Every structure is written in C-alpha cells, then in structure tokens.
Length: 110
Ligand code: AMP
Ligand code: ZN
Image (spheres, rainbow, N blue to C red):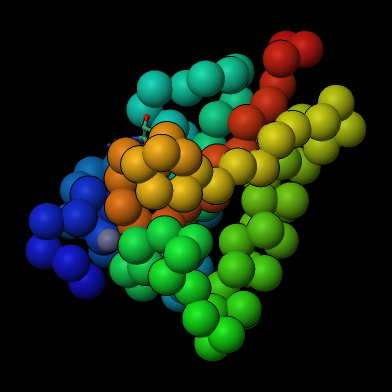
C-alpha cells in the first residue's frame, strides 16, 4: 500500500466510500465525477501504477477486473444497452490517479 495514494486508501477502508462490491483482490465504487449515468471504477487492492506496470503475474487480476466489470454491468442493468470499459494510461492518456483502475461507463439510455 502506498501512503499517499487515494485508491489505496479507499480500497483498504481508510477513506469512507460506498463500495458496490468488494472481495480479497478488488473493490468497485462510483466515480465521484460521473461522465455518464453509470460510471463505476474497478480497482485492485494492490497498488499498481498503470497498465504500463503490469507483468505476466498480473494476468489474473486483470482478468478478474474485466469479469467483475461484466458482472457490475449486469447489476447496473447496462449490459444489454451497452457500455464502455476504459483504462486511461499515464498523463497523456488522461490518467490522473496513478493506481490502476478500470472505468465502466454506460446507461445513456436511462
Ligand atoms: P483517471 O483519469 O483514469 O485517473 O480517473 C480517475 C477517476 O477517479 C476520475 O474519473 C475521478 O472522477 C475519480 N475520482 C477521484 N477521486 C475520487 C473519489 N474520492 N471517489 C470516487 N472517484 C474518484
Ligand atoms: Zn495505490
């Protein structure tokens, strides 16, 4: 856990946030500044800076993030209408929080 990392704090329960889902490896919560009616963040508990920092040993967490996003899309009832899954990578890619997270964005028809 990184001392000054916001998503480390949220995922380790050190900053009060309503979690929509939690297991041993990841948490899901709503984006504070949503870009669509449904905007969730899927965040691994382990601190990984960005997609650039993944190694072969991270294949499992990456797959789990995507499969969790898929389940959350169903729970939020956007699976049929459709949604986007997005990783912003580093500053030029729009990343502002340097702890890996997957955006689930959808619900425009709501
Ligand atoms: P990125 O630009 O990919 O780094 O996305 C970071 C996202 O985190 C942005 O969409 C922010 O709105 C969101 N965010 C920042 N602080 C919080 C917070 N405390 N709770 C929920 N979402 C947050
Ligand atoms: Zn972190």
